[in-house]
Length: 103
Image (cartoon, rainbow, N blue to C red; front, side, top):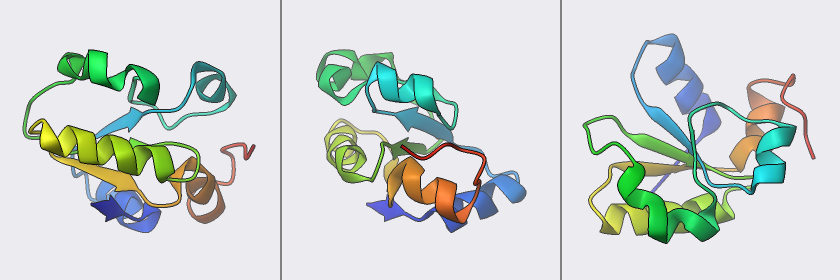
């Protein structure tokens, strides 16, 4: 259900395709992001049909990994290949890319 930042970084280095899904609030997204699709968690139930339904895994992220885990469970129940980024964007900043601001 979860994947760590180092594994995603390896995927990027190896050219493995996936999509990021940011489930944080708009103000958090304005502070920093990893790219990808943005649907805040409180809108996900009404907007998940906007997500591509292809073979690419969705890597769901939030600030620390709690909201993304909930979103991942919801998306899996609706047929998506989804994994939650363990530790969220905060741990990504610490382990992978310190240029991503911490908040």
